[in-house]
Image (tube, rainbow, N blue to C red; front, side):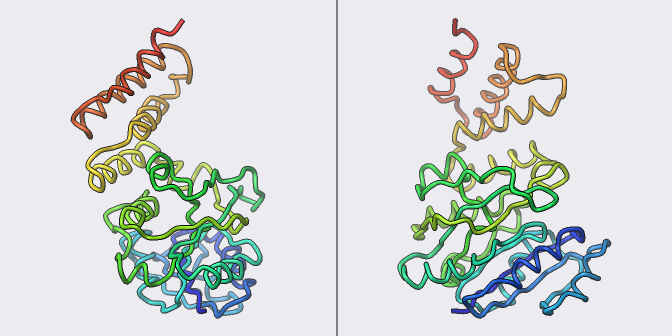
Length: 285
C-alpha cells in the first residue's frame, strides 16, 4: 500500500522540522510526503530546502489551510491519505499500524487512532478525548483527533474534497459529511499522533469565530444545530470578556440568554431540553 501524507503549512518554522522528521521515521509502506506552504515568511522554506531525506514541497500564496490540504490530496496518488499539520507529529510506528489495520479490514473506509495534546516541546500533557465510532455522538462532540485519522483515497473519489469555505472546522465538517453519507469509520485503539495545543494556534486564538463557523456548518449540513454546540458558543461568547468568571447564577444567566438567542438565530426555535436546563441553572436550590 502507498500512503500519501499531506502537510499544509504557514509560518510554522519552529515546528515543521519535527513534523517532517516524524514522517521520515515511519516504516511499513511506501510513503510520499508533500508540503503545501502558503508562502511562509519565517524559516519554513529554509527548513524544507535543507531537510533530509528530501520532501516534495511548494511555497506560494494560497487560500488557506483547507485549500492547501485539497491541493496536497490532488497532487498525490497513495491509496491511503493522511493529513498532518505543520505543528503536529506522528508517533513512531503510526503508519505501519494504520496500513496493517486497513489490510485486515478491507471494508473500513476511515480509521482513526488515539492521540495526545502536546506542548511546544512535544511533551504530551493530556490525552485527546477519543471515543469509539458513533455518528450521533460525533454530532455532539468531535472525538476524532485530525492528525490521527487516515482514509482511503476511494473516499475522496466518491465524496469529494474538504469544503474550502471553512477555515476552522473543515476537518470536523468532513467527518460529519462522510458519516452522514454512510462511510465506514473504525477506531484503532493505539496512540498515533500528537496534536499541538498552545495559546497562539488558530483554534484557541479564535474561539468565538470557531463556534460561529461550527454552528453555520451544522445548519447547512443538517438543518439545525445541536443544543450542545449552541451552549458551547454561548460559553465562548461570555468568556471572551475576562471579567466574566465561570460559575454562579449571573454567568449562567448570560450563557442561557446567549444560548437561547443563538437557538432562535440558527434553529428558529428554542428546544424544550434547552429551556429545562437553563431553568435548572437559574432556579435550582
